[in-house]
Image 1 (cartoon, rainbow, N blue to C red):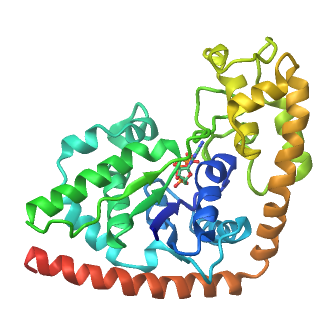
Image 2 (image 1 turned 180 degrees about the vertical axis):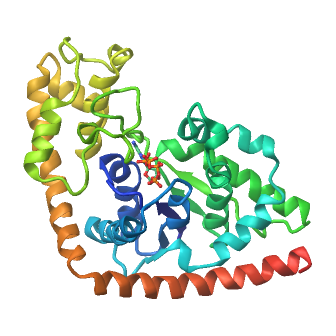
Length: 333
Ligand code: AQP
C-alpha cells in the first residue's frame, strides 16, 4: 500500500549519527519504496525557537538539504524543501494553537528538557513547537511519519490534535491521523560521553557525537574516546540493564549493521570493548565517509541545492495551499 510520508529535520548544524540512524536512514528506505509519496522538510521555523545566527542558519539549511541528498534521498522522487518557504505552515499552526489545550502542551517532556531550569526565559515558540510540528504533518495528509524515539510524544499530540479538530468542526476524517514510524532496532542514540543523555546537535562536546561531516580519523578518535565500563561484553541483553554506555555502543553497532542486539552480543560475547570499538569505528567510517564526502561536494554547489529547494517549495506550496483553502472553509473564514 502506498504511504504518504512527511518528516523534518531542524537546520541547527552538527547533524549526527542519531539523526541518521533515528530518522534519515529510514527516510531513504521510504524514498526507495516505489509507491510512496515522500516529503522531507528542512524545518527552519522550528530552528528559530532558539536563537540562531543569520549566516550560520543559511549554511545549515543548505547543509541539511545536502545531507538528505548525500544520504540517498532522490530529490526528483521525493519533495525536499524548507518550511519557511511555505506560509501555510505558520497559518495553520495559529489555527491549531487556538484549539489545543495548554494542558496538553504542559505534558511535553522535550520542552521541559530544552527549557531547562529557567523556563520563564524560554521562547513561546519553543513551548508551542509541537503545534507547528502537527501543522507540518497534517497539512500534507501524511499517513506515516518516520521519527526518532524522542519525537514519539510529539507525534501522539499530533494525533490528538487531528482528532480534536475533526470532532470540533464535525468533519470526520478531514485531518488524517498519522502513524509514527519508529525503528524498533535502537531508535534512540545516546551521547558517546554519557549514556543517559541523547546524542544531540547542541551538546557542547564535539566528542559526544559522530557528525555526518566527520572524517574517518575523527570517527576513529571519537569511538576510541567513547565512555565504556570496566566489565566484559555480556551474552544477554538483560545484563546490560545498568550499563548505558555499553548498551549504546552495542546498539549503534547493531543499528549500523542492520542486525539485532542479540546477534551483536553473540558476536562480541566475552570480548573486550577495544575489540568492539575497533570494529565499530571501521563500520561507521565505511558508512559515514561516503555521506560526508558527498555533503562536501554538494556544499560546493549552492546553486544545485537552491534549485532543489525552490522546486520542492513550489510543489509543497501547491499541496498545502489547497488544504488551507479547505481548512478556512471548514472554519468559516
Ligand atoms: N539521539 C538521537 N537518536 C535517535 N534519533 C534522533 N533524532 C535526533 N536525535 C536523535 C531524530 O532526528 C530527527 C531530526 O531531529 P531534529 O533535528 O529535528 O531535532 P532534535 O530531536 O531536537 O535533534 P537534536 O540533535 O537533539 O538537536 P538539538 O540539540 O538542537 O536539540 C528527529 O526525527 C529526531 O527524532
